[in-house]
Amino acid sequence: MKKVFVIDEADNVGTVVVAPIDKGEDVGTNGRITDITVTASTDIAYGHKIALKDIAKGDTVMKYGLSIGTASQDIKAGDHVHAHNVESNRGRGDKVSSDDTSTVPSA
Amino acid sequence: MGYIRPDDSVGIRNHLLILSGTVYANGVVERVANTINGAVPITHALGRCQVVPDLRVTRRFLSGTGANPNVGAVIVIDHFKEEGCTAEDIAHDISPTGKLIATVNIRGEGGFISAVEKATRIAQDFARQISMYQRESVPVSNILFGTECGTSDTTSGLASNPANGVAGEMIIAEGGRMIMAECTEWMGCENWLTEKAATPQVAEQIVAGVRHMENRALASGEDIRGSQPTGDNMAGGLTTIEEKSMGACKKIGASEIVEYLEVGEAPTQTKPGNYVMYGPGMGAESISSMAAAGCQVLTFCTGGGHTSNHPIMPTIKVTGNRNSYELMRDTVDVDVSGVFFDEINLEEAGQIVFDEVMRVNNGYLTKSEALKDNNSFAIHRVGPSI
Image (cartoon, rainbow over all chains, first blue to last red):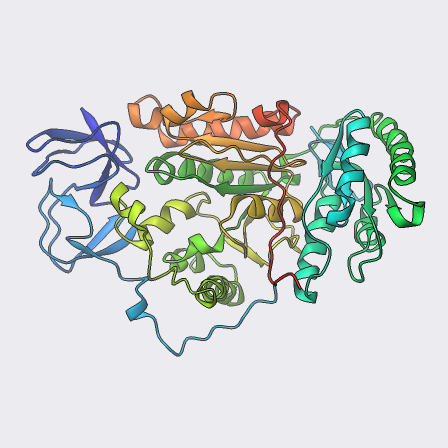
Protein backbone atom coordinates (compact mmCIF):
# COMPACT_ATOMS: atom_id res chain seq x y z
CA MET A 1 0.00 0.00 0.00
CA LYS A 2 1.27 3.48 -0.87
CA LYS A 3 1.38 5.12 2.52
CA VAL A 4 4.40 7.34 1.96
CA PHE A 5 4.24 10.70 0.18
CA VAL A 6 7.36 12.25 -1.36
CA ILE A 7 7.16 15.96 -2.10
CA ASP A 8 10.31 16.37 -4.25
CA GLU A 9 12.37 14.17 -6.56
CA ALA A 10 15.54 15.03 -4.64
CA ASP A 11 14.20 13.88 -1.27
CA ASN A 12 15.67 11.03 0.76
CA VAL A 13 12.76 10.92 3.21
CA GLY A 14 9.01 10.59 2.72
CA THR A 15 6.06 11.37 4.97
CA VAL A 16 3.69 8.71 6.26
CA VAL A 17 0.18 9.60 5.11
CA VAL A 18 -3.10 7.72 4.73
CA ALA A 19 -2.35 5.39 7.70
CA PRO A 20 0.43 4.51 10.16
CA ILE A 21 3.09 1.98 9.19
CA ASP A 22 3.83 -1.24 11.10
CA LYS A 23 7.30 -2.64 11.67
CA GLY A 24 8.26 -4.98 8.83
CA GLU A 25 5.67 -3.56 6.47
CA ASP A 26 6.64 -2.96 2.82
CA VAL A 27 5.41 0.48 1.77
CA GLY A 28 5.33 2.25 -1.58
CA THR A 29 5.49 5.96 -2.35
CA ASN A 30 3.23 8.55 -3.93
CA GLY A 31 3.97 12.10 -5.00
CA ARG A 32 7.11 13.08 -6.89
CA ILE A 33 8.71 9.64 -6.44
CA THR A 34 6.43 6.69 -7.12
CA ASP A 35 8.78 3.77 -7.78
CA ILE A 36 10.38 3.08 -4.39
CA THR A 37 9.35 0.43 -1.90
CA VAL A 38 10.96 0.35 1.53
CA THR A 39 10.55 -1.99 4.48
CA ALA A 40 9.83 -0.22 7.75
CA SER A 41 12.34 -1.09 10.48
CA THR A 42 9.93 0.11 13.18
CA ASP A 43 6.37 1.28 13.67
CA ILE A 44 6.02 4.79 12.25
CA ALA A 45 3.14 7.11 13.12
CA TYR A 46 1.02 9.13 10.71
CA GLY A 47 2.74 12.37 9.75
CA HIS A 48 6.21 11.11 10.64
CA LYS A 49 9.02 10.47 8.15
CA ILE A 50 10.62 7.32 6.81
CA ALA A 51 14.05 7.10 5.11
CA LEU A 52 13.80 6.18 1.43
CA LYS A 53 17.49 5.29 1.22
CA ASP A 54 20.50 5.00 3.49
CA ILE A 55 21.64 8.35 4.89
CA ALA A 56 25.11 8.42 6.47
CA LYS A 57 25.83 10.39 9.64
CA GLY A 58 26.62 13.96 8.61
CA ASP A 59 24.68 13.73 5.35
CA THR A 60 21.86 16.10 4.51
CA VAL A 61 18.29 15.02 5.14
CA MET A 62 16.28 16.24 2.17
CA LYS A 63 12.58 17.11 2.04
CA TYR A 64 10.98 19.61 -0.35
CA GLY A 65 14.19 19.21 -2.34
CA LEU A 66 16.00 21.11 0.42
CA SER A 67 17.93 20.43 3.58
CA ILE A 68 15.72 19.99 6.62
CA GLY A 69 18.75 19.10 8.74
CA THR A 70 21.75 16.80 9.08
CA ALA A 71 21.75 13.13 10.02
CA SER A 72 23.15 12.88 13.56
CA GLN A 73 23.70 9.12 13.14
CA ASP A 74 23.64 6.59 10.31
CA ILE A 75 20.11 6.12 9.02
CA LYS A 76 19.05 3.04 7.03
CA ALA A 77 16.34 2.92 4.39
CA GLY A 78 13.09 2.17 6.20
CA ASP A 79 14.15 3.84 9.46
CA HIS A 80 11.99 6.35 11.28
CA VAL A 81 13.53 9.81 10.69
CA HIS A 82 12.92 12.37 13.44
CA ALA A 83 14.64 14.41 16.13
CA HIS A 84 16.51 11.34 17.47
CA ASN A 85 18.57 11.09 14.26
CA VAL A 86 18.29 14.54 12.64
CA GLU A 87 19.80 17.80 13.81
CA SER A 88 18.48 21.17 12.66
CA ASN A 89 21.02 23.47 11.03
CA ARG A 90 18.94 26.54 11.73
CA GLY A 91 16.61 27.95 14.25
CA ARG A 92 18.67 27.08 17.29
CA GLY A 93 19.11 29.84 19.81
CA ASP A 94 22.60 28.59 20.65
CA LYS A 95 23.64 28.94 17.01
CA VAL A 96 22.25 32.42 16.42
CA SER A 97 24.92 35.10 16.34
CA SER A 98 24.54 37.33 19.38
CA ASP A 99 25.69 40.44 17.51
CA ASP A 100 23.04 40.09 14.82
CA THR A 101 20.98 43.24 15.20
CA SER A 102 19.27 43.47 11.87
CA THR A 103 17.59 46.72 11.01
CA VAL A 104 14.04 47.17 12.15
CA PRO A 105 11.51 47.63 9.35
CA SER A 106 9.38 50.73 9.65
CA ALA A 107 6.11 48.86 9.96
CA MET B 1 -14.40 38.96 -15.82
CA GLY B 2 -14.17 41.96 -13.53
CA TYR B 3 -15.30 45.48 -12.73
CA ILE B 4 -12.95 48.05 -14.23
CA ARG B 5 -12.60 50.97 -11.81
CA PRO B 6 -11.93 54.61 -12.73
CA ASP B 7 -8.21 54.12 -11.97
CA ASP B 8 -8.16 51.03 -14.26
CA SER B 9 -7.79 48.63 -11.37
CA VAL B 10 -10.04 45.57 -11.62
CA GLY B 11 -12.37 44.25 -8.95
CA ILE B 12 -13.89 40.78 -8.89
CA ARG B 13 -16.65 41.95 -6.54
CA ASN B 14 -18.65 45.16 -6.48
CA HIS B 15 -19.17 45.83 -2.79
CA LEU B 16 -20.67 48.84 -1.09
CA LEU B 17 -18.44 49.11 1.97
CA ILE B 18 -19.58 50.81 5.17
CA LEU B 19 -16.31 51.34 7.02
CA SER B 20 -15.77 52.28 10.66
CA GLY B 21 -13.09 54.92 11.09
CA THR B 22 -13.03 54.20 14.81
CA VAL B 23 -14.42 51.62 17.21
CA TYR B 24 -17.03 54.13 18.36
CA ALA B 25 -18.62 54.27 14.90
CA ASN B 26 -19.26 50.52 14.82
CA GLY B 27 -22.88 50.78 15.94
CA VAL B 28 -23.79 53.28 13.25
CA VAL B 29 -21.92 51.28 10.61
CA GLU B 30 -23.81 48.08 11.44
CA ARG B 31 -27.17 49.85 11.50
CA VAL B 32 -26.60 51.40 8.07
CA ALA B 33 -25.32 48.16 6.54
CA ASN B 34 -28.34 46.27 7.90
CA THR B 35 -30.67 48.59 6.04
CA ILE B 36 -29.01 48.58 2.64
CA ASN B 37 -29.19 45.71 0.17
CA GLY B 38 -25.73 44.24 -0.36
CA ALA B 39 -23.84 46.65 1.90
CA VAL B 40 -20.87 45.14 3.74
CA PRO B 41 -19.94 46.52 7.16
CA ILE B 42 -16.36 46.54 8.38
CA THR B 43 -15.96 47.27 12.06
CA HIS B 44 -12.92 46.98 14.32
CA ALA B 45 -11.60 47.86 17.76
CA LEU B 46 -9.11 50.60 16.88
CA GLY B 47 -8.78 54.22 15.80
CA ARG B 48 -8.42 55.79 19.23
CA CYS B 49 -5.63 56.17 21.78
CA GLN B 50 -2.94 54.61 19.63
CA VAL B 51 0.71 55.62 19.42
CA VAL B 52 1.58 57.26 16.11
CA PRO B 53 3.33 54.32 14.36
CA ASP B 54 0.45 52.04 15.37
CA LEU B 55 -2.18 54.50 14.17
CA ARG B 56 -0.31 54.78 10.88
CA VAL B 57 -0.71 51.03 10.32
CA THR B 58 -4.40 51.24 11.27
CA ARG B 59 -4.91 54.00 8.72
CA ARG B 60 -3.05 51.96 6.09
CA PHE B 61 -5.35 48.98 6.71
CA LEU B 62 -8.55 51.06 6.61
CA SER B 63 -7.55 53.14 3.59
CA GLY B 64 -6.19 50.13 1.72
CA THR B 65 -9.36 48.15 2.35
CA GLY B 66 -11.49 50.99 1.06
CA ALA B 67 -9.23 51.37 -1.97
CA ASN B 68 -9.37 47.62 -2.76
CA PRO B 69 -10.77 47.23 -6.28
CA ASN B 70 -13.46 44.84 -4.98
CA VAL B 71 -15.08 47.89 -3.37
CA GLY B 72 -17.28 49.88 -5.76
CA ALA B 73 -18.26 52.55 -3.24
CA VAL B 74 -17.37 53.33 0.34
CA ILE B 75 -18.81 55.35 3.22
CA VAL B 76 -16.40 56.03 6.07
CA ILE B 77 -17.98 56.83 9.42
CA ASP B 78 -16.24 58.19 12.49
CA HIS B 79 -17.47 59.71 15.70
CA PHE B 80 -15.07 62.54 16.39
CA LYS B 81 -11.80 63.85 15.04
CA GLU B 82 -8.96 61.42 15.67
CA GLU B 83 -5.89 63.30 14.56
CA GLY B 84 -4.09 61.29 11.88
CA CYS B 85 -6.92 58.87 11.12
CA THR B 86 -10.18 60.75 10.58
CA ALA B 87 -12.87 59.61 8.17
CA GLU B 88 -11.70 62.49 5.95
CA ASP B 89 -8.09 61.25 6.10
CA ILE B 90 -9.16 57.76 5.10
CA ALA B 91 -11.40 59.09 2.33
CA HIS B 92 -8.51 61.25 1.12
CA ASP B 93 -6.28 58.16 0.90
CA ILE B 94 -8.94 56.28 -1.08
CA SER B 95 -9.80 59.19 -3.39
CA PRO B 96 -7.10 58.53 -6.06
CA THR B 97 -9.09 55.43 -7.02
CA GLY B 98 -11.88 57.69 -8.28
CA LYS B 99 -14.59 55.51 -6.73
CA LEU B 100 -17.69 56.80 -4.93
CA ILE B 101 -16.70 57.94 -1.43
CA ALA B 102 -18.54 59.71 1.36
CA THR B 103 -17.77 60.47 4.98
CA VAL B 104 -20.14 60.86 7.91
CA ASN B 105 -19.11 62.21 11.28
CA ILE B 106 -21.46 61.22 14.11
CA ARG B 107 -20.83 64.29 16.23
CA GLY B 108 -20.97 66.51 13.16
CA GLU B 109 -24.41 65.15 12.30
CA GLY B 110 -25.72 65.68 15.80
CA GLY B 111 -25.67 62.13 17.09
CA PHE B 112 -26.40 58.52 16.28
CA ILE B 113 -29.87 58.89 14.76
CA SER B 114 -28.97 61.74 12.43
CA ALA B 115 -25.73 60.03 11.41
CA VAL B 116 -27.57 56.80 10.61
CA GLU B 117 -30.08 58.73 8.56
CA LYS B 118 -27.48 60.63 6.57
CA ALA B 119 -25.29 57.60 5.93
CA THR B 120 -28.29 55.43 5.01
CA ARG B 121 -29.49 57.92 2.42
CA ILE B 122 -26.02 58.11 0.88
CA ALA B 123 -25.71 54.32 1.00
CA GLN B 124 -29.03 53.86 -0.78
CA ASP B 125 -27.86 56.16 -3.56
CA PHE B 126 -24.44 54.47 -3.80
CA ALA B 127 -25.96 50.98 -3.82
CA ARG B 128 -28.16 51.90 -6.77
CA GLN B 129 -25.34 53.61 -8.65
CA ILE B 130 -22.92 50.68 -8.35
CA SER B 131 -25.68 48.23 -9.26
CA MET B 132 -25.35 49.60 -12.79
CA TYR B 133 -21.67 48.58 -13.03
CA GLN B 134 -21.09 45.59 -15.30
CA ARG B 135 -18.46 42.88 -15.36
CA GLU B 136 -16.20 43.06 -18.36
CA SER B 137 -13.74 40.61 -19.83
CA VAL B 138 -10.26 41.36 -18.47
CA PRO B 139 -6.96 39.46 -18.53
CA VAL B 140 -5.70 37.43 -15.56
CA SER B 141 -2.72 39.79 -15.37
CA ASN B 142 -4.92 42.14 -13.32
CA ILE B 143 -5.00 39.68 -10.45
CA LEU B 144 -3.15 40.29 -7.22
CA PHE B 145 -3.50 36.88 -5.63
CA GLY B 146 -3.05 36.52 -1.88
CA THR B 147 -2.25 33.31 -0.10
CA GLU B 148 -2.40 32.20 3.50
CA CYS B 149 -2.25 29.03 5.56
CA GLY B 150 -3.82 28.32 8.90
CA THR B 151 -4.85 25.48 11.15
CA SER B 152 -2.16 23.55 9.30
CA ASP B 153 -1.55 19.83 9.71
CA THR B 154 0.57 17.08 8.14
CA THR B 155 -1.30 17.38 4.86
CA SER B 156 -0.77 21.16 4.51
CA GLY B 157 2.87 21.18 3.48
CA LEU B 158 2.38 18.15 1.23
CA ALA B 159 -0.89 18.89 -0.58
CA SER B 160 -2.78 22.18 -0.20
CA ASN B 161 0.27 24.44 0.04
CA PRO B 162 2.24 22.97 -2.89
CA ALA B 163 -0.94 22.76 -4.98
CA ASN B 164 -1.41 26.44 -4.25
CA GLY B 165 2.19 27.08 -5.29
CA VAL B 166 1.45 25.40 -8.63
CA ALA B 167 -1.71 27.51 -9.06
CA GLY B 168 0.24 30.67 -8.21
CA GLU B 169 2.81 29.90 -10.87
CA MET B 170 -0.02 29.53 -13.40
CA ILE B 171 -1.40 32.95 -12.44
CA ILE B 172 2.07 34.52 -12.61
CA ALA B 173 2.62 32.90 -16.04
CA GLU B 174 -0.44 34.82 -17.21
CA GLY B 175 1.01 38.08 -15.88
CA GLY B 176 -0.49 38.11 -12.39
CA ARG B 177 1.15 38.80 -9.05
CA MET B 178 1.06 36.78 -5.87
CA ILE B 179 1.52 37.86 -2.24
CA MET B 180 2.65 35.66 0.63
CA ALA B 181 2.70 37.20 4.11
CA GLU B 182 3.21 35.63 7.58
CA CYS B 183 6.95 36.28 7.87
CA THR B 184 7.04 34.33 11.13
CA GLU B 185 6.74 31.25 8.93
CA TRP B 186 9.74 32.14 6.79
CA MET B 187 11.96 31.49 9.79
CA GLY B 188 14.29 28.63 8.96
CA CYS B 189 13.91 28.81 5.20
CA GLU B 190 15.05 32.38 4.62
CA ASN B 191 17.69 31.08 2.21
CA TRP B 192 15.12 29.49 -0.05
CA LEU B 193 13.35 32.85 -0.23
CA THR B 194 16.42 35.07 -0.56
CA GLU B 195 17.68 32.95 -3.46
CA LYS B 196 14.55 34.02 -5.31
CA ALA B 197 14.89 37.71 -4.40
CA ALA B 198 14.99 40.01 -7.41
CA THR B 199 17.61 42.25 -5.78
CA PRO B 200 20.06 42.09 -2.86
CA GLN B 201 17.90 44.70 -1.13
CA VAL B 202 14.85 42.44 -1.25
CA ALA B 203 16.94 39.59 0.16
CA GLU B 204 18.13 41.81 3.03
CA GLN B 205 14.59 42.94 3.73
CA ILE B 206 13.38 39.33 3.95
CA VAL B 207 16.02 38.44 6.53
CA ALA B 208 15.44 41.67 8.48
CA GLY B 209 11.68 41.13 8.45
CA VAL B 210 11.98 37.69 10.02
CA ARG B 211 14.42 38.99 12.61
CA HIS B 212 12.14 41.91 13.45
CA MET B 213 9.16 39.63 14.09
CA GLU B 214 11.36 37.34 16.13
CA ASN B 215 12.61 40.26 18.21
CA ARG B 216 9.04 41.43 18.84
CA ALA B 217 8.29 38.00 20.27
CA LEU B 218 11.51 38.03 22.30
CA ALA B 219 10.59 41.44 23.73
CA SER B 220 7.37 39.91 25.01
CA GLY B 221 9.32 37.07 26.60
CA GLU B 222 8.92 34.35 23.99
CA ASP B 223 11.79 32.78 22.07
CA ILE B 224 9.88 31.59 19.01
CA ARG B 225 12.99 30.40 17.20
CA GLY B 226 14.28 28.46 20.17
CA SER B 227 10.88 26.86 20.75
CA GLN B 228 10.32 25.69 17.16
CA PRO B 229 9.02 23.27 16.14
CA THR B 230 6.53 23.23 19.00
CA GLY B 231 5.83 20.13 21.04
CA ASP B 232 2.63 19.54 19.08
CA ASN B 233 4.54 19.86 15.82
CA MET B 234 7.13 17.34 16.98
CA ALA B 235 4.49 14.86 18.08
CA GLY B 236 2.89 15.27 14.65
CA GLY B 237 6.15 14.36 12.93
CA LEU B 238 7.79 17.70 12.17
CA THR B 239 11.47 17.43 13.07
CA THR B 240 13.07 20.83 12.44
CA ILE B 241 12.08 24.45 11.94
CA GLU B 242 13.31 24.36 8.35
CA GLU B 243 10.93 21.48 7.62
CA LYS B 244 8.03 23.33 9.20
CA SER B 245 8.75 26.59 7.40
CA MET B 246 9.28 24.95 4.03
CA GLY B 247 5.84 23.41 4.34
CA ALA B 248 4.39 26.89 4.82
CA CYS B 249 6.49 28.62 2.16
CA LYS B 250 5.53 26.05 -0.48
CA LYS B 251 2.40 28.16 -0.92
CA ILE B 252 4.45 30.04 -3.48
CA GLY B 253 6.29 28.52 -6.40
CA ALA B 254 9.65 29.07 -8.04
CA SER B 255 9.11 32.56 -9.48
CA GLU B 256 11.23 35.54 -8.51
CA ILE B 257 10.33 37.57 -5.42
CA VAL B 258 9.90 40.99 -6.96
CA GLU B 259 9.31 43.16 -3.91
CA TYR B 260 9.20 43.12 -0.12
CA LEU B 261 6.19 44.92 1.35
CA GLU B 262 5.47 46.30 4.77
CA VAL B 263 2.30 45.04 6.44
CA GLY B 264 -0.77 46.18 4.47
CA GLU B 265 1.32 48.01 1.88
CA ALA B 266 0.33 47.84 -1.80
CA PRO B 267 3.00 46.73 -4.28
CA THR B 268 4.69 49.60 -6.09
CA GLN B 269 5.62 47.34 -8.98
CA THR B 270 3.47 45.65 -11.60
CA LYS B 271 5.96 42.99 -12.65
CA PRO B 272 4.50 39.46 -12.59
CA GLY B 273 5.95 37.30 -9.84
CA ASN B 274 5.92 36.71 -6.12
CA TYR B 275 5.68 39.49 -3.54
CA VAL B 276 6.31 38.93 0.15
CA MET B 277 4.85 40.93 3.00
CA TYR B 278 5.97 41.48 6.58
CA GLY B 279 3.29 40.46 9.04
CA PRO B 280 2.12 38.05 11.69
CA GLY B 281 0.94 34.48 11.35
CA MET B 282 -2.38 35.49 12.90
CA GLY B 283 -4.80 34.64 10.08
CA ALA B 284 -7.32 37.48 10.27
CA GLU B 285 -4.63 40.17 10.52
CA SER B 286 -2.63 38.54 7.78
CA ILE B 287 -5.41 38.21 5.22
CA SER B 288 -6.62 41.72 6.10
CA SER B 289 -3.12 43.02 5.38
CA MET B 290 -3.26 41.44 1.93
CA ALA B 291 -6.75 42.81 1.25
CA ALA B 292 -5.42 46.24 2.26
CA ALA B 293 -2.59 45.76 -0.23
CA GLY B 294 -5.20 45.33 -2.96
CA CYS B 295 -5.53 41.55 -3.31
CA GLN B 296 -8.82 40.76 -5.02
CA VAL B 297 -8.81 37.07 -4.11
CA LEU B 298 -7.04 34.82 -1.62
CA THR B 299 -6.55 31.11 -1.11
CA PHE B 300 -6.51 29.95 2.48
CA CYS B 301 -4.78 26.58 2.78
CA THR B 302 -5.93 24.66 5.81
CA GLY B 303 -5.40 21.16 7.13
CA GLY B 304 -7.91 21.31 9.93
CA GLY B 305 -10.56 23.23 8.01
CA HIS B 306 -10.43 26.96 8.78
CA THR B 307 -13.46 29.26 8.89
CA SER B 308 -11.61 32.45 7.94
CA ASN B 309 -13.30 34.73 5.41
CA HIS B 310 -12.57 38.36 4.62
CA PRO B 311 -15.55 40.70 4.17
CA ILE B 312 -14.53 42.08 0.77
CA MET B 313 -11.86 39.66 -0.53
CA PRO B 314 -13.19 36.20 -1.45
CA THR B 315 -11.30 33.68 0.68
CA ILE B 316 -11.08 30.27 -0.96
CA LYS B 317 -10.36 27.50 1.54
CA VAL B 318 -8.24 24.64 0.24
CA THR B 319 -7.52 21.46 2.18
CA GLY B 320 -5.49 18.31 1.63
CA ASN B 321 -7.23 16.59 4.54
CA ARG B 322 -10.21 14.57 3.36
CA ASN B 323 -11.65 14.26 6.86
CA SER B 324 -11.57 18.03 7.29
CA TYR B 325 -13.27 18.52 3.96
CA GLU B 326 -16.07 16.12 4.90
CA LEU B 327 -16.41 17.68 8.34
CA MET B 328 -16.31 21.28 7.09
CA ARG B 329 -18.10 20.77 3.80
CA ASP B 330 -20.09 24.02 4.09
CA THR B 331 -16.94 26.04 4.74
CA VAL B 332 -13.99 24.51 2.85
CA ASP B 333 -14.16 25.06 -0.90
CA VAL B 334 -11.56 22.79 -2.44
CA ASP B 335 -10.32 19.27 -1.59
CA VAL B 336 -6.95 18.21 -3.02
CA SER B 337 -6.47 15.18 -0.77
CA GLY B 338 -6.61 13.00 -3.88
CA VAL B 339 -2.82 13.38 -4.16
CA PHE B 340 -2.49 10.94 -1.24
CA PHE B 341 -4.76 8.31 -2.77
CA ASP B 342 -3.26 8.06 -6.26
CA GLU B 343 -6.25 9.94 -7.69
CA ILE B 344 -4.49 13.11 -8.84
CA ASN B 345 -0.92 14.37 -8.94
CA LEU B 346 0.29 17.72 -7.58
CA GLU B 347 0.06 19.42 -10.97
CA GLU B 348 -3.55 18.34 -11.27
CA ALA B 349 -4.18 19.53 -7.71
CA GLY B 350 -2.70 22.90 -8.72
CA GLN B 351 -5.00 23.02 -11.74
CA ILE B 352 -8.00 22.38 -9.47
CA VAL B 353 -7.01 25.32 -7.26
CA PHE B 354 -6.35 27.54 -10.28
CA ASP B 355 -9.73 26.67 -11.82
CA GLU B 356 -11.52 27.50 -8.57
CA VAL B 357 -9.71 30.86 -8.32
CA MET B 358 -10.76 31.66 -11.88
CA ARG B 359 -14.38 30.73 -11.19
CA VAL B 360 -14.42 32.95 -8.12
CA ASN B 361 -12.78 35.74 -10.11
CA ASN B 362 -15.68 35.49 -12.54
CA GLY B 363 -18.26 35.87 -9.79
CA TYR B 364 -18.79 32.40 -8.34
CA LEU B 365 -19.43 32.80 -4.60
CA THR B 366 -17.15 31.01 -2.16
CA LYS B 367 -18.96 28.92 0.44
CA SER B 368 -18.28 31.47 3.18
CA GLU B 369 -19.37 34.35 0.95
CA ALA B 370 -22.68 32.62 0.38
CA LEU B 371 -23.04 32.32 4.15
CA LYS B 372 -21.97 35.96 4.75
CA ASP B 373 -19.52 34.62 7.34
CA ASN B 374 -17.40 37.76 7.11
CA ASN B 375 -15.37 37.03 10.22
CA SER B 376 -11.83 37.98 9.30
CA PHE B 377 -11.15 41.69 9.35
CA ALA B 378 -8.44 42.50 11.88
CA ILE B 379 -5.79 45.19 12.07
CA HIS B 380 -2.19 44.42 12.97
CA ARG B 381 -0.83 46.27 16.01
CA VAL B 382 2.67 47.62 16.28
CA GLY B 383 2.14 49.54 19.51
CA PRO B 384 0.11 49.54 22.71
CA SER B 385 -3.16 51.28 23.42
CA ILE B 386 -2.46 54.31 25.61
